[in-house]
Image 1 (spheres, one colour):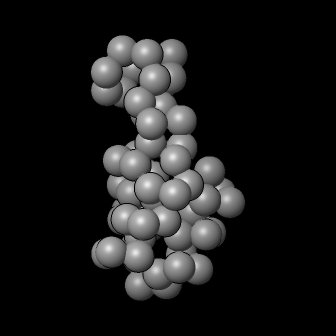
Image 2 (cartoon, rainbow, N blue to C red):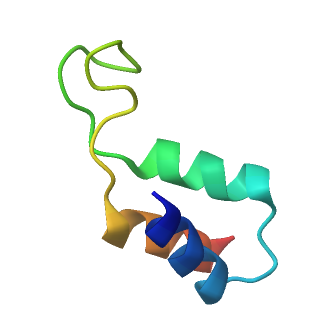
Length: 57
């Protein structure tokens, strides 16, 4: 998580902390029950999708 957050901020230093968190959550690959759940949280991070989202912000 910290590595991905750093990568997103290096790609777009204008992102706020909240934007970084939202990008990571919204770009994750969903596992298990659809949506946030107790077993998998928001899912598996997807670096490619997160980086694309950061560049488009």
